Length: 217
Image (cartoon, rainbow, N blue to C red; front, side, top):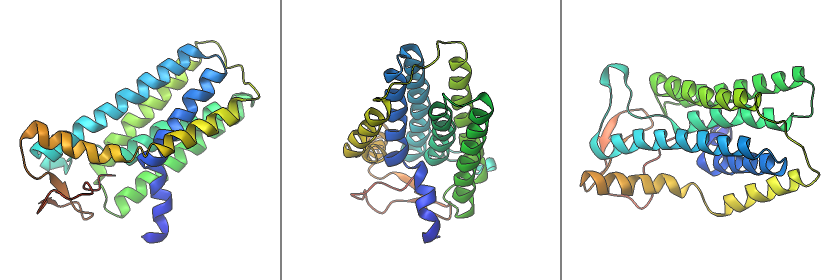
């Protein structure tokens, strides 16, 4: 499994949140103000939905046993929502055929990450499928909206500005958001310890509230 972790970690908050920020900066640099706003709204709404599902499980143990569903997969949602859009945005100057190919490649890569999450039992099939459907819905909603709004005006400084945004957001350590979800869940539920699942997707109770939050891909 260790050799596959770098691929799985592409969907991690530490990578996808800076990537989403870089997309927003790229759009702003191209004076696509409305499109940038829509991207931020769509991405934020999706993140919020994932966070709510995790808080529900961590704080109250909310789940659907029949489907083996405990919470949405952040890795799967972020990968399917961000990667196809990233390819689509970067290929704005390319012919329509190549943009479509880029989106398909982005989908294939994100689906590969989803498959690894199931293979290595970080999440169940139902959790990954639900997350991927929501992620693709977010990405394609953005792509459809982009078709009815003014096209990007790619500037020479768009790439360095986006890279800088990526680096700055990385420096803010966005992965710490996962730890804060545990704190929020405990505060709202009044529990001392969060529910969690192991890599084998079994529900257990934390013996103590650890310094590092339970790993919830």
